[in-house]
Length: 394
Ligand SMILES: Cc1ncc(COP(=O)(O)O)c(C=O)c1O
Image (cartoon, rainbow, N blue to C red; front, top):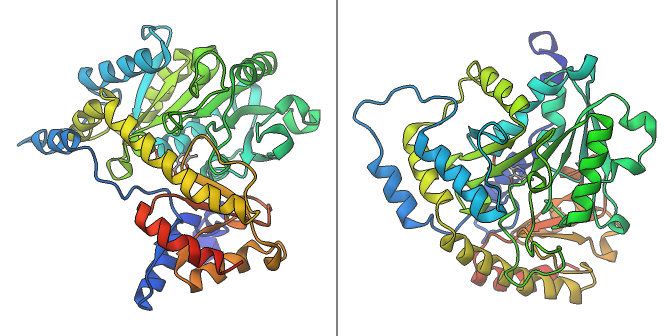
């Protein structure tokens, strides 16, 4: 068997979210009521004009889409960046490539960066964090280099604090603010320091910005901008931002996003993508353009998640499992109760027996134990039902 697959594929662990889906399915088959806090998949309807545009846009004859997308979609991307971040730059200063959600873009960028600058192979990334930072580096022949995020650094990845041996040979660094799973947000001074470090060390800054629009309407304390920012606001030099409609508009099933940033990198990336077979279907492009062009439906989503964060966050604080309620994302990163003696896998198993699906930190990290993540995607009513059940497991 091992001789039929390369070592990276042969030794790959199951993808955590697939395990969670299977767990939910198994519980349902046992006839249990399932409260699925596992994967950050939406359960709210997609905004109707987006659905209508998709249906209207299915052509009689469907042809190969282009890698760089339609004029309408490109204009919608640039207009969004202008409205949301006050970025009004042309293609020569800020290039954009559409993506089929950010996951594939995160995966594929490694193919173009590993080996750059005289053979640099290392990719730095946050731990806990999105698993594809690591696996993309592995598949691209790179060297994954996880950096454990610490509460005392507000979960900010600070490469300047790392030993030289760890940062030497870095081709790129991933950061993700607002952060899955901790909900941490980066402020302007952090972005400026990180960008300065990247420029000094010639490291490409890869900002996974898929939660940038999912923050509390009451958020304050992130500087003059008053909302989470993309590092593109401060520099385009060696900076790429990965944007997605999955969380902003609850459109995980559409697979729609884009990468924006340094044209010297992204024009090469677009050339490479012509080989990947990743043009976005024209009807998805049309629906995505409608979604990027509207902010009202995003405001409504923000409000819903902010209320859920308060509802569940307060209960978890009372039980001593959560210090502060995050002001962004829809995740709660909680300590397992004392009774579980730091065993996140055992605690999540206990929850599963009661019908609650949560992600153990062992599945979302490379060795962080004693935490679990709740994605607040079940309905308000389900969250209200699930909380006392969870409280009964402590
Ligand atoms: C941090 C992070 N990055 C990227 C993604 C991928 O999202 P998508 O491919 O749906 O845009 C997710 C999905 O949950 C995520 O949590």
